[in-house]
Length: 382
Length: 160
Image: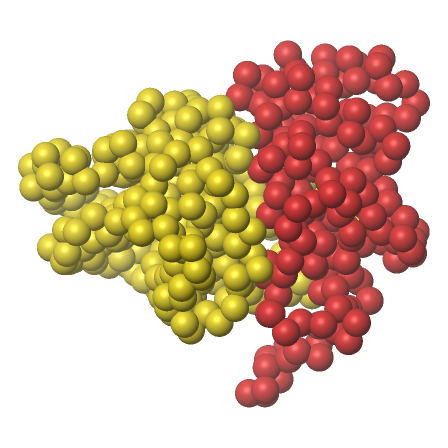
């Protein structure tokens, strides 16, 4: 059965509209359906979902165009506005691209500091995502409050290191802005111990709970070949059995010197995606501990040479939502001629749109399906 | 297979219509003639490059071309191929790659609206990122170099 639902695209403020023939068009959004502004248009017949259309672009700020007017240091600030939860990982991709263009390597200590901040950011972002995922499956509001509270000590550490809880602007091409403050090591280790204890509570109360598994297992199964073909990114890709993580496959920062594993799952359903995120928090805790123990001494930044040595580059980095890549074309100047940002959520939204085409999805399963991908409208909109 | 090997395979098959721009440990940048772009794409897919990771275009008003690029990754070989080709800026159009890489669907939509490139055979060319009342005739395509972004400066003052 196929419907041309795009001719039904009418008033976004009419929540439910009857289309005749037993069909309903349901608007989820555009005000804050997840986090940010965007809309899911769901075409249903009673309980069965025939089509999901994702309407993004409500917060398109033209970051790609803005970057054409900024030099590489100024570009840091607008770029961070893509995902406020995960700013350092977003920035990491850009910083890698610029360092590749100029042909420099940051000092070793800067690499370790970057790793620590990236992993702390990843933990905080995953905790937020898991809270929302729990909420979507009817675990409202306990787990979301827990995860929000448990993000606070991490944000406090980030504030201690960078001076800001969210948008740190801490990475610059060539290193990081400042060295670690005194006493941060003990605080990080304490917080990691605390988090580990909290994760055990989550396991008992929620992630291995039978009710939660019944609600999310088998919902929205994404097969491996489709995940690759449609370009799923990050935990959504790994939950479908693809062993790929930019941190290991394209080593950057201190990751090649640290010991960690890629978390994968073969089921490819909503539960698997949530579970991969949960296990990745444990991996990140381990990475932070290793990095803070083995951090070398030395300078934390290096000046950029006057001109880039390369004309173009494609750099990849792993954000909490998956891979982000930056294609930068420069004419040998200190400003980019063209920046193409390819964020993870942009790819995952397309996968969400395709899900009803390969399986039957019930209307009640739509929220857990969407939240399990952890998409972020501002990330996709740029 | 590594990028070096693939580049020699490609040059062997397509001759001087394909130009290897640069070979790096995990990247291969190639520039192809517009006429063989789909053949190259099909060959890349046969070689295992199934996953599109980026797609877009760059506007070059001085050369009067728009350069389109596709980045694809292979789970078997674990490196990225960036395939680029030029299209005429006065008549910007090319045939869609959705039949080869379905994941480029939204990227092509985005290129259509932001760069003003007509993508033939695309099933859903409608506004994705731009506002619903955006007019191409009056306001143009934002990523073109002749688009004046300073028009859209904040009403709350000069923030450069």
